[in-house]
Image (cartoon, rainbow, N blue to C red; front, side, top):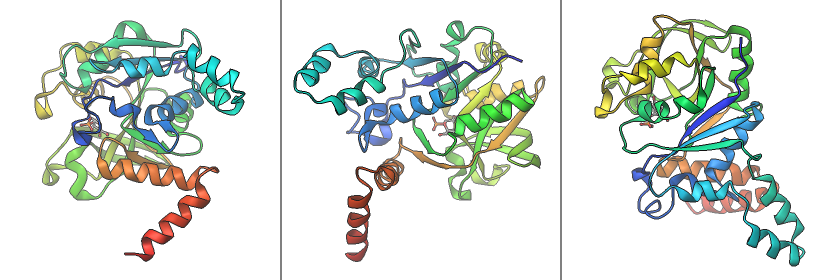
Length: 291
Ligand code: G1P
C-alpha cells in the first residue's frame, strides 16, 4: 500500500458568501489572527506527512502563489532592520522548493471538476484533498488522524462531523451502517440533500483520502446538485468497486467560507494564540457583559 504523499487544495472558488471582502483578494488569504486561512490548511497537510501540494487555482488567485514564494525585498528589509523574529516566521511559512504545483481550473464547473484538473500531477497514487474553506483545530491534525486510519485500513476515507439537522442541505451527507471506533462503514453518500431526504446528520467536512481511480469516474461524471460536477457523486460510484470509510475526527471544524464560521475561527484561534490569548479573553468577557 502506497503512502499518502500528495494533496490537492482546490482554491478556485469565488468566495461569494463573504463578498465584498473577497472582491479583490482570494478568500483563502483572509487573515485568521496572524496568518492567512490557507496557511493553517497547508500546515495541517504538512503535519500529516504530505510532501507535495497541488493548488487548483483560478482567475484572480495570484496572491496565493506569491504568498508561498520568497519575497526578497521584504526579507532584505526585515534583515536590515534586525526584525529577526518576523523574518523567521516569514521563512517558516514557505513551502519547501518544488513542493507546490499550481494548475488552473478554467471554468467554475464544480468541486469534482476542480479535483479532476489535478489528475496529471497526482498520477497513479492515493492522495488527500483538503478544502481550504474549512480550518480544523485538532491535535493531531484532522488529516494526520485520517492518514493514521488509512495506514491501517487502506481504501478511501472521507472526514465527517455531525451537524444540526437543519444544516444538512449545505453539505455532502453519508449513510452510516456500522461503526468501529471513529471509522464508519457506509451504504452511500449524497450531495446537498433536502433535509427530509438526508440519510443522517453526518456531514462531509472537507478532508478526503482517495484512490486515483476517482479521476476516471470524474472524467465522465454527470452534473449533480447545483448543476455542478460533484466530487460526492464520483465517490459514491467509487464505493461500488472499492472500500470506502467515513472517519469522525476529533477536533473543531470552522467553515471560513461563511461570515459566522470565519468569525468563529478568528475567535477560537485568538483565544488559543499565546500572543493574543489573554487580551482576547478579556475582550470576550467585556463583550459578553455588555449583552
Ligand atoms: C463541498 C462538498 C461537500 C462538503 C463541503 C464541506 O461543498 O461538495 O460535500 O460537505 O464542501 O465544506 P461546498 O461547500 O463547496 O458547496
